[in-house]
Image (cartoon, rainbow, N blue to C red):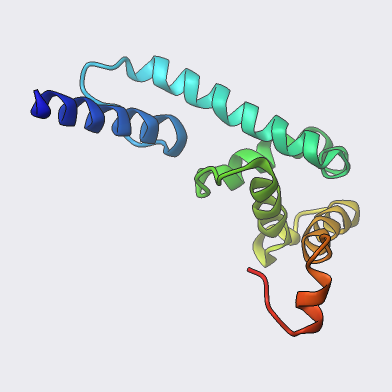
Length: 133
């Protein structure tokens, strides 16, 4: 019985990895259906980031989805959409991405990254010289 539970748990972990990280789905699972669902989850993730920071989505315009898709290829989903938005803004601010972006997009990404530093309760930590990652 314990072996069956362990096997099921391993298959479930494999399925989740296929859905969110592009891993190979477990044997017996329809690969195409997993790809379709993985794309749906990725789009949901991008909409969540766009809803959290509409100024960035507006600045990117039609390029929002392709940019997010490129970012997400190498970025497994973090714990929440706020962390995802921060990571996406860091990705857009990286030297490789920054070259191809409009000044409006760069400003929006920088604004998102600055907001993280000045959340309530962080100002005293900043005065003490603490760093936030």
